Image (tube, rainbow, N blue to C red):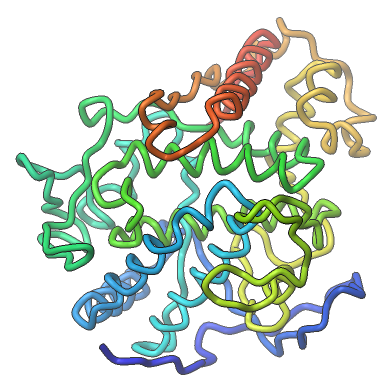
Length: 386
């Protein structure tokens, strides 16, 4: 295995000045910052470069390396305060290794909410990109950038995916629900539970195969998925939660900014704010700025929801100047707008909850919240443009 950890400046741009000074920040500001793109926005040349780097990393054993780390630390980096900091550091480590092969490599993300209605039909899961469901008794993947790969961790096996629902993946979580989670998450514990036990978990579970296992980094979708989860955390952080980390660690102690990240033994504070230290990345849809404002979606919500529904499920949006100036929308008016009602998201089977050592009460509570959200939105006549 080639240990290549060079830092190259390709794909970097000038770092915009941050307008908020944070006393908690002890890391040096990045002199430049690179942008992680949504996967389908990549050019043909970027995708060709990415595939070449991934093939080389597979050849040199890096997929097995990262799968082994994730497997070994699985119980400590989930269902605890380590979830967001560890995976931000983990994706950065992957990207760092990849840049050793080609300095122009930048880890993209997959915004799965774009494909939430019919995930199996996503363009991302076609042969031109990462491929789809596995075939045969072992569900070996035959198309996409990992087609025909043999994985070596934890033992030799074909790279596999085994979509649930007989390959017809049930709906995931809508962009509206994720926006609601971001706006209603008044603590790290609340926000983490809602992300980890909704979009995060359902993608791992529904895709099956290697991605369903503790050694899920065998599937490059892991990196796409967790880059997106990191993007959602960043959106939440920018809503006055930049340094919020109160939560329980895996040993049930209280987490602070000086608590070490599992495996890396580096303080959590080192990964909290993008644009500082080694975290010199931003996301195409969410560049570094002091406040998060998903203007397109939020404007749609303002112009499509009755005031009581807006304030209940989107408390930040409800306080925007545009919301105060907007007329109250009644359900019959909302129902006349273009779009479709939001479908109810898939639920986890109880055997999955048990095998993943999740607390059934918490899982049931989160899933009820998601169902209540859909019911409230549909009763209000809301039509999702997605």
